[in-house]
Image (cartoon, rainbow, N blue to C red; front, side):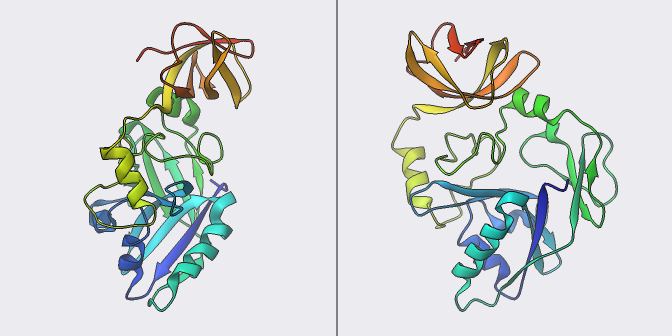
Amino acid sequence: MSDRRILRLSGSDAKSFLQGLVTNNVERLEDGLVYAALLTPQGKYIADFFLAGDGDAVLLDVDAALAEGLLKRLNMYRLRADVQVEMTELQVKRGTGAAPDGALEDPRHPAMGWRLYGLEGGDDGSDWDAIRVAHCIPETGVELGPESYILEAGFEALNGVDFRKGCYVGQEVTARMKHKTELRKGFRTVEVKGAAPVGTEITAGGKPAGTLFTQSGGKGIAYLRFDRAKGEMQAGDARVTWTP
């Protein structure tokens, strides 16, 4: 799991600091891992991560490509709060078989298994793409990017957002999408015949209908325009169908 980095937030304000920034309820750390995201004030995705309790501190498990930028952004928000943010040498091990002592259940879906933090990384060889595709779980840097909105990305179903926790950065836009609008776009698992590179445009009747991402076992994760995603669609040389 060298593609992950673990930050540690410590200090008397660490948990309240995070509570005012991220999409999920940090008080749930008492129950295990918390999946959350940091958004722009406009409600767009910056990073998604797991939070784990570490005594009075909090570990933050994030994609390695986002770690340095996230560290800088958290320090920018820190102001006068009693919180220190540092990069650690900890690693994450994950798997879907029997969980070792100290492992924590992945909160996004039971099929995603467990995560264990320590000095050793790695995984048990599970087919993570197949699991993600089957349950429509987007991944940093593949499906998730700077233009993503977390509700379109399925964060509600993935236990990544709490609508009762109070304010956080991007909360107003996210709440408005939840309560005042009907989602017209979003990630869905589709049937795929053939294959196409990640990021291939999906068309329906010659009109843009979405984008095809991770594929496995005749299925794929697609970002769809629901009003156009009808019948058999094309994605390069692949044929794509979606059943609402």
